[in-house]
Length: 474
Image 1: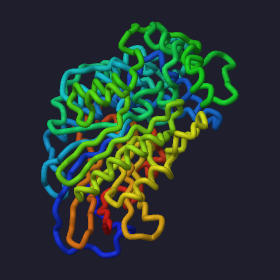
Image 2: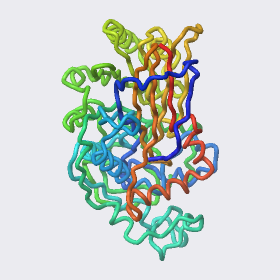
Image 3: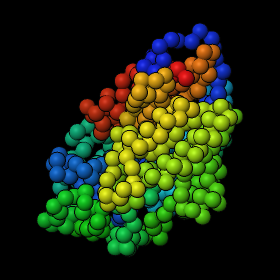
Image 4: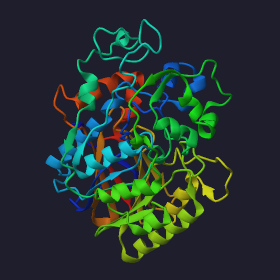
């Protein structure tokens, strides 16, 4: 756990409370784990080798040198929370953990099963054999363009300071056992949970490649579509068809999953909020009620594809009905979605029933019971105040928690405390997984920091985005 002291943010409350207050809810916010099958033929890591070309920027990142370790990072966090399920400020047990999406990376069945077995408990493994960490002859002789942990293999990444790690692929591919969180948890879906590479809807041509035995390590010669993002949404198979084919072990478990299967797997592993109503409707919007707080979970994936989100007009109407119920019994409401105000921007299809961030924030402002909005997607820590647009007392806090796949790979403890005089306090504390030195999770941290480079500070956020006490006058 980070040892930084807690700062104070009072944009939504002029006066600090004097009493200790009553703890209403303690939760763990985690996001963007991106459990990934690195050997999948449905991926196109070669795009990362072109990261310096602004033309390809809309599709980054398609590869990270440490991505074979993401499920080990999740397991390390789950293990620590299982052993220490105590909210750090109040020292009371957590009520639940909430994932704000992108639990998996490429919408694959094997990734999904690995994620839910780690969260709910069980044995699992994801093989890294056949992925780009293993150098071969497909790209010709000489220096391997991806990071190869083998000491004897020259590559472009070790020249930049990436280490050699004996037995890396075997260690990353080994079976792990998780005892599960040991307390309640829930999740909303992110774009990577139901779209290929978080961007493309299921496509028959790509699905045939995904479950096959050949993985492309380079693009087709001369391949440079006019608009790369648009091309990926419309014809994703073109990016995985490629050249420099490597023969790998085919697997039917690389098939794409839809939202119903995603929900069913979470239900089976014990996730709250999902039931037969959601499976019948194919809609993941739901509520989780506690004594003092209602959590309202929203699916903000855009039905036309693309990684940015939107929200339906019918969802807004449903949301306002649920908020009206909260106001009748005097409780508080916390919203949760994958996309936040900076990423509810998807206008693909020009559907008037699909709305953007302003529609959601306006609905929240119409209901003063809303005190927080928890989001992910951006892979950074950020806390933003949303004061009431008409200058009235109140507003809400939008809390973005960084990813587990990238630096700083932290979760966030959030404790909601009611004080005298109508003041609500939200205590935010960033949490590390505390994995032992030499472990795969610890190795991930070192590699993720190196990969982040000058962006690490931006992803970590400022002091007011991390360990901070957020006050709201209600």
